[in-house]
Amino acid sequence: MASAKTSRLWDLRTGREIANSEEIDARNLVFEGTDTRLLAGGSAMNGLRRFVIQRQGGEEGGRLEIVEDFCLLEAQVNHFALSPDGRTVAVTFRDRSQVSLLDALTGEPRGVLDGRAGVSRLQFDPSGRWLAAGCWKGAGVRIWDRHHPNAAPVDLFSESHWSYAAFAPNGKWMVTGSRDGYRIWTAGKWGAPEAVLPTASVSQTAFDASGEYMACQISGGTIGLVHLNSLEVVAELRPPIPDPFDIGNLAISPDGVYLAATTAGTEVFVWNLVLMRRELAGMGLDWE
Image (cartoon, one colour):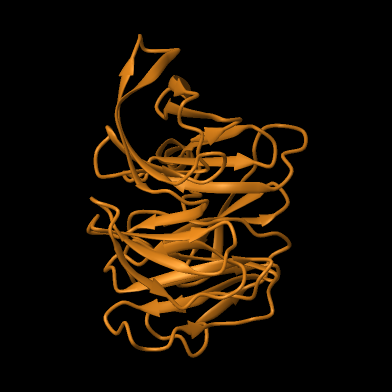
């Protein structure tokens, strides 16, 4: 997690911060398959950098020591995404007008995609074939087919001032979010969404490992756990503070145990989904 010009490492099991670093001032942080290799970019950091890190100190209040620092790209990076095979990085820039592809190991250019004004948050689908980009002060969602690099990109809709796209881990679904709610698409079938989930508020989404459930904001400060096949909201969660504002980012741990959420303030909240389901099951209210 990056906040207030400091990158922080948390233990989700205890909810404790175990290390931090003021040297890594980045908006986007992605682990490269291990807990020691970190890609970082955006915010005040110039360029896209790879850090090899190690934690120093005790169980709490430690610091992240940078063992290696390699610059893949010197530019004003806005957002980036790492392909599932770890070989390619897609990057957008502060002017939000194009998407560049880089070799993830060396930073060598691999191509430039046909962008458009406002292009922003990027995500690869689990197969690595599709690359999706949302927008900020732009228009809708754009999809590129990496199996057919000469094909024209697909624009899914254009009426939204703000939008994003996220793929489910099973590769079956892609969910887009915009001011009028969420659209659920079958990946690769871009003619029309399979379903629309209108909501009072939207946020980034997160999926469980099966790809059958997603977590998303459904109203100001309220997170819904949604079954993607039925669009049933099977549970609602709300941060335990008087006014949580809007939900920002959401993430579900790879083992499906923890759901983490940030708010428009500086708080991070974590729920143990396994424990919650166990308590619900005891009352006959589990969602399966």
